[in-house]
Length: 257
Ligand code: NI
Image (cartoon, rainbow, N blue to C red; front, side, top):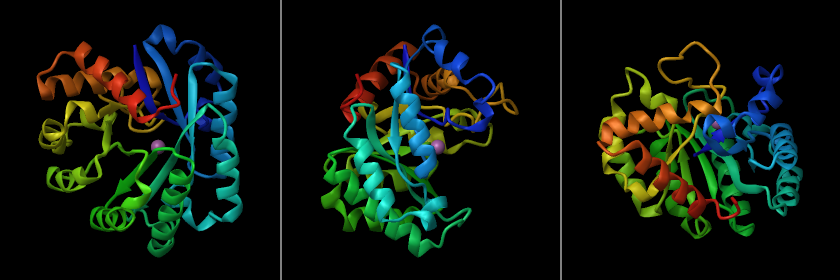
């Protein structure tokens, strides 16, 4: 059984068959799934889904794309939700200089504010990071006092060299469908240098559908395809990776039952 540590089951692409997908998670080998918010509304919806289904948990937070909408009332709202046993992390938060949908300065400010929030709530953070590797390193270095409860780079696609520099923050790395893509050469360099105790798996569904289902909607059940690819890259048995990734997920997300 696997844990999909990052999915967006609140997405409208699941409107037709959301309940069906959730009720068939177990028979598809998914023991738990973490539904991740990216703004106030999706965090609220993720929370509601997690409250309704035993096998779902959630993360609440504001994505870098939506940083310009983040305010004090959102922080208060996330704080209120986080008292619940189903909220296992603050996320996804981070920096995205590829799309630049919010001003970079605002992205940085909102990211640090949510690091502080997560620390005050004793929760780990789920980090989205794209094309902002130096700034991320800089912000984490300057705010290391907020990193007492763990951090996860979700769908990490940076270089091995950068990953090594991040090691000083003792992060976890989650890999999903993108490691199965033909152009994903980076993962042959990145995966082998990461401690097995720090590797998790995810889908980011409905996005990043793995090979051979590209073009279709991604689903939590495809988590296994990322594990199979990692197993091939690392030359480690699939079952061994599944086992360690579940232990790792529960170590990081301490509220996950
Ligand atoms: Ni995501």
